[in-house]
Image 1 (cartoon, rainbow, N blue to C red):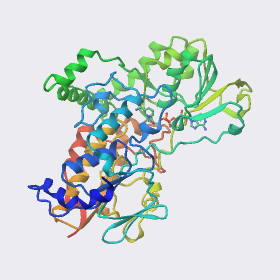
Image 2: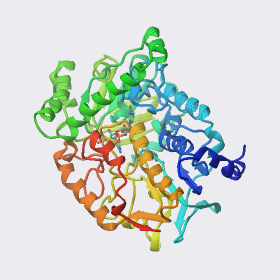
Image 3: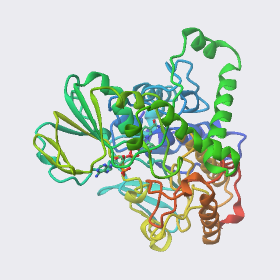
Image 4: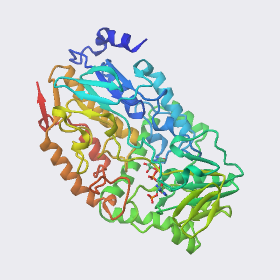
Length: 503
Ligand code: NAP
C-alpha cells in the first residue's frame, strides 16, 4: 500500500480507535526511521493514530545502527535493556550484542509491525515551517505536505566529525571514518593507525588488534573505563526467554533496576557516587601493571565527567606486543603515515578515523521555523533550553525525541525514546479528542526547567571540570541531570498548565 493509500484509508482505520474518544486523525510527520522514530510509529498505530509518515533520508530503517558498520561495533548497554519494551528479543546472542544483530532486530520488528507502509525513504527533511495553524514540511524544493504535528527523531550522534588534520588527504593508504565505514577496507596483517579513543575507537582497537601486524592508537585525551560483563547466552536461556511465562518481563525489570542504579552513580551525589567513581580507577590499576603505560592511560579529570568507556578488552589489547599507544599529538599526515609532535613518522597502511560526531547538531539542520519566525539557532544561542527534553517554546505541536536534556548519559537511548514517544502520543491523543488546536510550552516553563537543569547538573559527575561532547556553548552538559526514575515519572505526566494552549 502506498503512503497516500494509507492516508486515504485513515477514515476506515478510525474504527480501530473506537472507545478512545478519538474524533479526528492528526496528520503527523516523523523525521527519522531509527529506534525513536519507528518506536513512535508503533505507538501511534497502537493508539489508532494512523495518518503519519516517517521521513527517512536513507534507504533503510535503523539510523545509527544502519550507518555504523566498523569492526567491533557493538552496544555497551545490555541487550535486554537496549530493545523496545514491547518487543523483547529472546534470541540475543550475547549480553551485549554486536551492531549487526541490533540492526537485524530493528528491521525484524519494523517488518512485523508493518511500518514500511509509513516510511518515505530517500527523503531528508530540510525545512519545516509553522504557519499559525499547521506545519509545512519540505525536502529541498519539494513540499512533503501539511501536518498537524512534527516530531523529530533524528538522534544526536548523526553527522560525522571529520578532523582538520594537515595532510590527511595525502595519505597513500585508505582513510576511513568509523561512521562512514568503507566495506573494502582491510586490516588483517596490516599496519593500522586508529585516531580517537571514545567508545568507538576503543571498540575498533579491541576488535582488530589481534588481526593486524601493528596497531598504533593515537590518543589525545585518555578516558576512564569500566569492564563489561560480555558473554554469550546459552540456547537453553534463549528458549526459556521465549517460552517461560513472565521471564522476559522479569529479566527486563532486573536490567532496568541495574541500569537505574548505574545511572544514579552519575546523578546522585553521596557515598554511592564516591564508590562509583572509584571503580574506573581500580579497574585501570588492576588491568595495567606497567606504571608508564598506566600513567599514559590515566585521565587528568574525574571519572564520569565524560561518558565512561565500557570495555573489558581494550586494556588487554593495548598491552599486546603489536600495539602502541601514542600520546604525542598528531602534527600531520604524510603519504607514508602519521607524524607526531616528537618527530616520529608512524608508517601505516590503513588509517581509521574514530573522531566521533558533531554532537551539538541535534535538530539544528532540520530548518525548523516556529511561531513568529522562531529558529532553533536563536533559541539555543546561549545554550540549550528545552521543556523536559521534549518540547520548545515557540514551536507548537512539535516534539523532540533524543534532543538536548535527554538522559543519554545514563539510560538506554531506545527506552528514553520510548518514554518521550509516550509523552508525545499523550498530547497527540488529546488533540485527536478535539481538546485543543495547538500547544507549545510557555517560555516561563522552559526557563524554569532549564534553570533547574543547570543547577542540578552541577551535582552530577558530568558537571565536574573537564571538556566533553556533552557540553553546549555555555559549557553546560546537555544531559538530563536527575535519575532515570524521575525521567520516567516526568514523561508520564502531561502538565497542561505549563503550555500555551490554543483551543
Ligand atoms: P567521541 O567520544 O567524541 O570520541 C572522539 C575521539 O576522537 C576522542 O578521543 C577525541 O579526542 C578524538 N579526536 C577528535 N578530533 C581529533 C583530532 N583532530 N585529533 C585527534 N583526536 C581527535 O566519539 P565516539 O567514540 O564515536 O563516541 C561518541 C558517542 O557515541 C559515545 O560517547 C557514545 O554515546 C556513542 N557510542 C556508543 C556506543 C555504544 O556501545 N553504545 C559505541 C560507540 C559510540 P579528545 O577526547 O581529545 O577530543
